Image 1: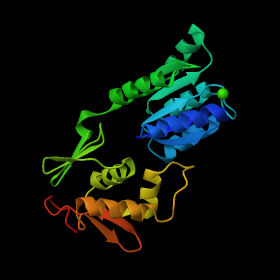
Image 2: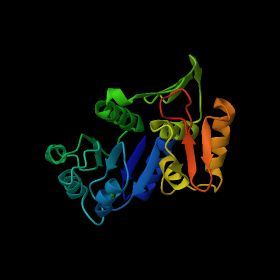
Image 3: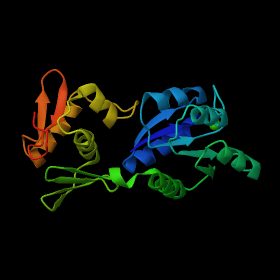
Image 4: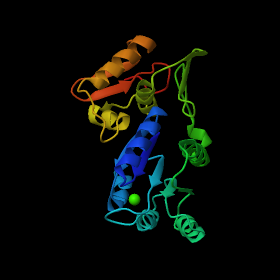
Length: 226
Ligand code: CA
């Protein structure tokens, strides 16, 4: 799950980013309102946490701009503006929820979960590939009826690959999918995740396409065998 955090208070942003990463979310952080729409166009986010007082463009204007451009990602406003009118205008501008600062982290977590639940389409919550069942809600993998626990980045990598078995994903795409903008990525991080997945799932499950990237090989599924 990828969250866009738009917050110009560096201290608060840092705390939120750490807490959300700890919960298993991938977090990208922006400090400016005018960068929200470009970011939403650039990649898929599962939710946005949006401050209102922002340099570049006020959060409300950024939200309206995003909605005008058919960006329907769930947005939770996080703001110190605590008047009823502020909340009404925020929700009427297209926010899904409004949280007044300061707020307990637990409340943000719960509202975020609720937001993600509401927007999730039941049909895409479970991926079945060959003998593997990936439950995207609890990020759990069942194989041959046996539940396997994977670290979150290995799971995220497997979910990406399993979205289109047989399709070759470039290294750059997979690294982007697994890491936030500001995450420090070791140059061999992806290889290490692939190595671990192969050890756990079998060496032939992920195929290396030299100079390009990786694909999931599922001999049982139609058309997935390269
Ligand atoms: Ca602010």
